[in-house]
Every structure is written in structure tokens, then in C-alpha cells.
Length: 299
Image 1 (cartoon, rainbow, N blue to C red):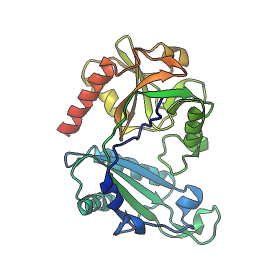
Image 2: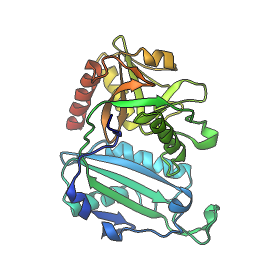
Image 3: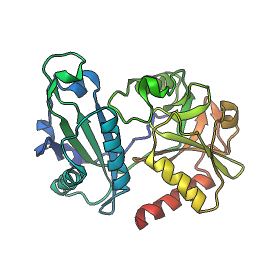
Image 4: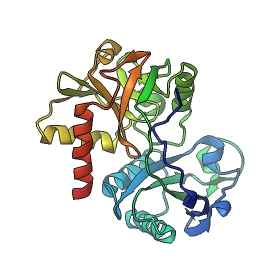
């Protein structure tokens, strides 16, 4: 079976010549470089945010910018721009690249360039570093995703809070590697109590007897698409539960799908070698997809 990922997109030659925002300048891709002393490169000390462009509008921009500033405050990082400044940087980068739809932006802010190659934040004396990578990006996931449960957990807030969009993604990367070694596309991660939580890259939902289930949210990224799906279910008389549930509940689901800014709702066909439902895009997932598309258009 051909490998796929939840962030698989159509190849687009225009991405060879994109312009990138780097600390207030718009520069060609080949010139968008940062120092080896940058705290993001050296230690993963930074936060990021993803945005998606549909028909000239960045979907749910206010919520995404809120989340970026919340994450920066959590790690005591001054972005160096106010809210309007960040939005202006996004729009400036979009205009420079002539993008109107089917684009994805990744905003990255690190603590900046360090004076010496060690951990203490006070050594970051030049910064922050603020980058926006904006690509022509149309999701192209040729089949439903397969998952494998891995030993890597979504941890407790006092270790590394999973709600934080930080540059330190090694835990999720190791989970993804473990899933690939098991022959799956991506990883299904449990929380510290052994309940089903999320994947290494996206939030996770199951459908059982007409009801939509997802985790309590205590150990997963506070996904904006995740919350939109929950809100859409409530607004359209679809039973939805944020609850603890186990792999036993998951294997017997009628459908399963992932949510994220990039792919919106991505169906899951198999978990730990067990087919989920018919192994294809299910009717509830399809309905939620359409409700989400309508919401994006209306927004």
C-alpha cells in the first residue's frame, strides 16, 4: 500500500519560487535562512501556527491569531508585533505571492539568535525570529489514512503541555516513526490513562451508532477545526460527546476521521490492522465535511 500522510498535497511548481516573510522582509525561498544559533533550530524554543486560504479569505483567522499569542505568552515570548502587525505580515506575504485560494501558511516565532549555544532563555539576545512560509497547497490524500497505536503518550501539562503549538515536536515525530515501522501511515496516541486521545498530527474522532465521539480535550492540541466540528454537530442535531473512551470502543466504530487546519476532515480506514466500518469515507464524515465547507464559505 502506498504511504500517505495527513498533510499530502498536490505537487505545485509555483512553490519553487515562493517568497517568504523573514523578520519584516519578503525574501526569495533560497534566501530565507536563519542562524545556526537561532533558539528554534538549536532547542526547539518557539511556537507556530497554521492558516488556510479559501477563496481569498484566511479561515478563522481570529481564532488562529488568538492561539498564536496565547502560546507565545505561555512560553514568555514577545512576538515583537501586535495582533494587527501579525495579520498585516500574513496579508503582505499573501499579496507578494499572488495567492488567492488553496494556500497554507505556517507562522513560526522563535526566541531568536543566542549569544552562546546553551539553554537559558537569557542567552537569546537577538530576536525574536518571525517567519511565514506560505505555499500553494491543495490537499490530495488518495485514500483514507491507516493508524497504528504507539507507546508514545500525549503527556501531562507539567511535562510538555500538549495544548501548546511548540517547535518541540519530537514526541509526535517519534510516534509517527513508530507507526510507520508498524506499517501504518500515522500514529494513534493514548493519554496518560490509556484512553484514546489524538494522532501525532491531528485530532481524532469516531462515529458510533450515529453519534460523534472525541477525547475530553485534556491531553490534545486545542484544535480550531476540532472545535468547529463539535460546534457544527451541536448546531445540526448530531449527538457529540467529549469523553474518555478506549481502543475497544475505537475498533468497533462505524467511522473514524481526523481534523486539522490542513486537511479539514480526513477519513480513517484502519487502526491496528482492524478495518473501521466499511474502510471508506463514511456518511457522517461526509456530512460533517459538507457542513464545514459551508461554514468556511459563510465565514
